[in-house]
Length: 469
Image (cartoon, rainbow, N blue to C red; front, side):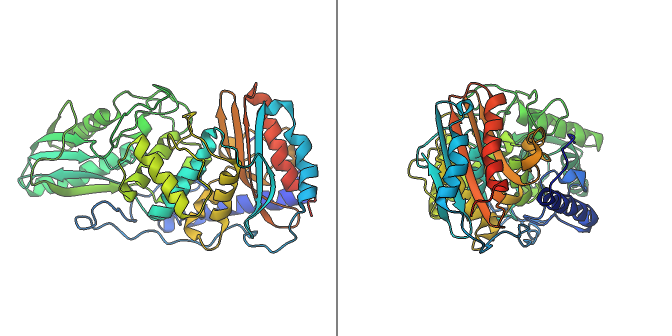
């Protein structure tokens, strides 16, 4: 952890609360599934992963999935705090000078909302559609939680013909499928085959859940694997679990070949086909493995700015909404779901779920309102959007920020966004009077992230540390 300056009383309380939550998480880690909205995504630091429980929506008639993990109450005490509303003139006096920083490029927009009332307290170009970069993940994850719920889990399935001689590994769109879970799936499959006296099978793999191009419009890139319905460890080939990394060009085929080797290690010879194929006629599920609950996936996607996971969640939203699981179908589904939440999406465009596509367009007002809706006590299932936000100076993509000038450390929770010439920040702060504010700051045509990011951080810090009412 970076060395911080001496913390103020408010920072000490905020940091102590974060560390206390992490310690409590470790204490309950062995007790069962992770509660939705109760912890940060990097839960491997506090306890083991789990792969049981939850629900799977595509085929309830054929699936008997475990019950979803229960929801936990919100952890942010500031939700609904009836403190004094900051005066617009005071906010303008605090933010206007910071917003004119040349480091923020030629176009910069801003919105600040009081989450208790939904009132826009400050706006500068708040309704201008801009390229959001990774802050678009706030919209993606909100849409997924709204339509699927925090307990939803993504299944990877093995289908078999009645005689057990033809197997199909069916991708359900879970990019977090790990080697350990794949081995457990092989164990379950082999138990079924042994009961049928089968020691040799034909193995195929099915990726038909997704449609359209597999390669993201940015092309082959270390920031994202081919977007397919079947993969292991996000197609990473270097053992990493977040951030840019070299990726396989055939994540589905690699997963099928690894599964075949696991079956062979357990005494069942399997020859995976060289191309995807749908299950043979009469096939039925014989084994399944489930992802962590959607609440945990959302937190991981936001904390680590996980592009592969964000694209998967966009496609899960499309499937639930009856749209094709493609870039275009997912974009339509996300926008429609946000519209159902009465969010200002008239000028929004969702070209992908991750924010890597510069054709994504959202307003600062939309991002700030998304966060305000997640704080709305009428929408508790959206709470993981708040609990997944990186914490300034401590976690995720904010771990290395706010450490030189520590006044915002532990007080700002925000999603970052970075593309060449684009820098954004959207999140929440608890104002000095205890009121929770949501904010979004978007900048384009920036010369360097090394100057733009500190300028954005100063804006958020002003909200958290200055007396605004």
